[in-house]
Length: 88
Image (cartoon, rainbow, N blue to C red; front, top):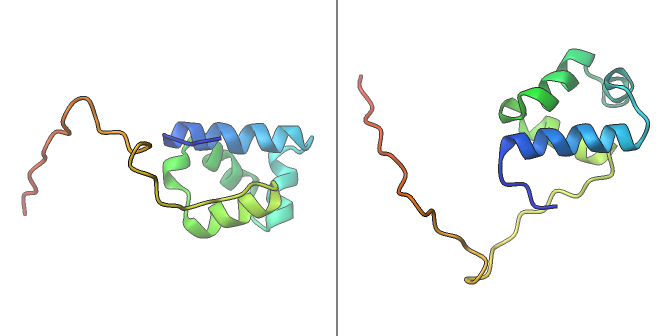
């Protein structure tokens, strides 16, 4: 499955956990974290560390793949991203 948003990532984690018949507490025990950490991964996936993501993938039998897209797979945004100025 291709993940395009953090919300997609949270759903994949939740669905994979449930497919194994595990509770959040079961998964937490399996990777050595608290249940609330698993809850946060599922509900606020934009906050997941790379370390946690690797542990989750290993425990849930998910493959994390980083690869170059071929030119025909690269999509360009239909609307330009808004520029934000930084003020110090």
